[in-house]
Image (tube, rainbow, N blue to C red; front, side, top):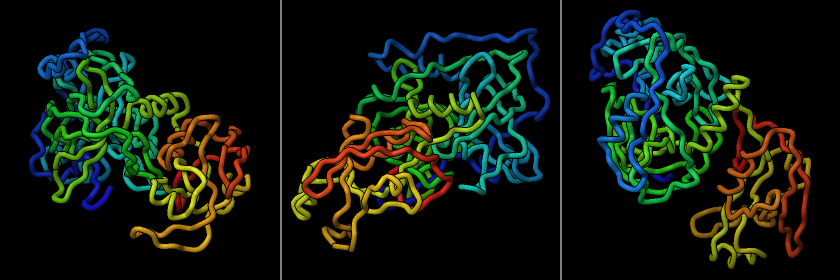
Length: 391
């Protein structure tokens, strides 16, 4: 991602701009049943109407207040500190399920991840209720919350498909930047298929959506929606030199979000397959310099000891050769297919491995010198932290 700082977009409780709010336990309007409002969407998907998007989808966007220290909700919202943070989220269904980022409701990384001691969800109509953390997925930076829907009016947001997202498409981000609830910003998809780091894990999130819609601290966990009002991503982080949004924000793609939520809903945990290689992408000058046999693929640089890749006999490179300001190990295998699916580069390999389950056996096509081979690999379970990359 180059220079600058990658920052999560949840807001710490010591922000002096946090809005004032009513009692943490009171203020709930009284109804006798759960009311689920099915929205009309933000438009027909062809014309971008930001007002219609906000009117229809904004009611399903919530503020998530997480308490980690001894302070209460008012300490966090009032800017008095107390050890907590404010993020965003959105309603998934009439059962009271809420999606947000894992880093909004947890602290730490890897094996040291700790959940907030209490989480509250505040709706657009002013209702504020306590939420349970069903599970968190640090690899995708997604968390599933559950509230008691009794007496609430819920507006679920429809989930789209990130596979259909194109650069230049208009988008809207809704959330609580700097604690300013129910805020809308609009922009376009600046790029797709970015590879970003999970803030609570050592592995990359593939296929991320880059946008110039304003994303700031407090936007984490809120939806990025398309012209039809469908969620195409969950706003996750910004690239910044100043600590604020500078036109480079990233969202976890909704197709990964769906997989994560399904696993969390079923078991409270999300497991990912693990191959255990570090690889680099190929480009024409690199292929020419090292006389590589193919023009596309993931060039294996290292294989993690004890990993599924090592057990299957996949080979990393040796030595160190500098080329165009980067060091490369020579002689490693080049992976070009997994289960018949072409692998164009290292990001493709990471994304492809993530589609499988631990324990599954897959067939890799690789190039070793002048030979093409197929190797069967039984994938392992991704560890909470590991050196290297590439799955």
